Length: 163
Image (cartoon, rainbow, N blue to C red; front, side, top):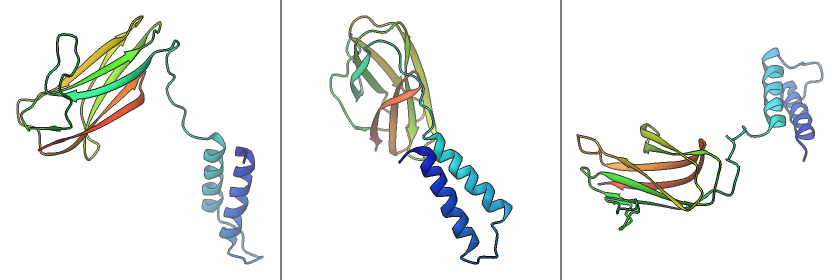
């Protein structure tokens, strides 16, 4: 169904519900405003995502581990870490682009941002971008995730646990 048709149908439905079936009752200003806001949001569609870069750049894998080799690759991928571990994310990508930013956003289970970092690239060949987090105090036990984004558009998510 087209957005305009959906919006009109939504407005009509909300007006009928607001009237409660009573032919003499009119919807309140608040009900009209709510219906209009809902119809406008439905007509606009989902929020616009940040643009992806020009070129054929794409992420092919994301691995988490306690160590990386000289090329920045995780040798032993893990999903569970100890409270004192330094945690690395190796992002492998192929393709080229005139310029982009690859970023990692580390989150606790409640959505609290633990850390965020980004690296600007102008890739022409396969690349490995590595992000690492550590802290002086042990990590609290629990679930975490890392979001990998290209130009602020999340394209990969990995979950891991500290125990």
